[in-house]
Length: 261
Image: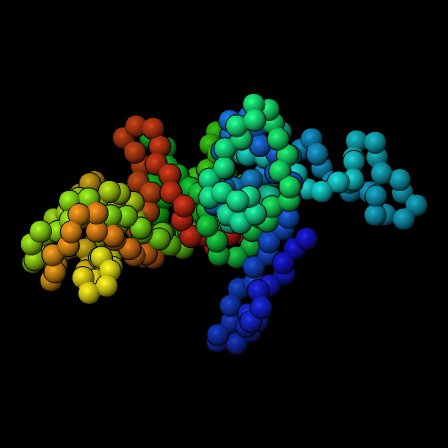
């Protein structure tokens, strides 16, 4: 079942907002496989919905069995075109791993096909960094979305932002321009506006310099250990997932999802 639009959306005029299309599907998850909010899923080619059963006087072909849409991870041997992106509701866990020892079918979850939403994306060693404005696709090699050339059947959407949510483990012990080491640098770029700490200790800083593991910014307050850092990267071209020296980097980012074109 599709959700054609959210209540209160404005369809035209200067304050128009985009519609959101969510569709339900049964999720097939292999033993030991994991999916989390932002997981892109593809159609299970062995379980296609009948294309003929709704045509009067035309019995369905034997290769088609009428049933709900079923989806699998992009790395599945049964995977086909992109179906949609799981937004996190419906399975009772932010990150779910199938520990049953066998492939399991999970009751219908909701997958976003159009509209802004969360997408699990990544970059591989020797690959292409994920930047704001870049196009995401899927391939059979990775379970997460990657940067690539948009094509029917592989398209996920365009990156619009990365929600920054990390900590400064050692805190900030002095005011003025300070270089600090956060728990993660993903999404933090020169010019990023970050909210540091909370309550009476909260302040907003603008990043003036970065390295692979640190950022520099002018602080007016000191902050204790494990101080929270929040923000959002929206500058087109800003790196939200850098290419790793080995292995891969992954993060859940905000994407203008459009898997139907």
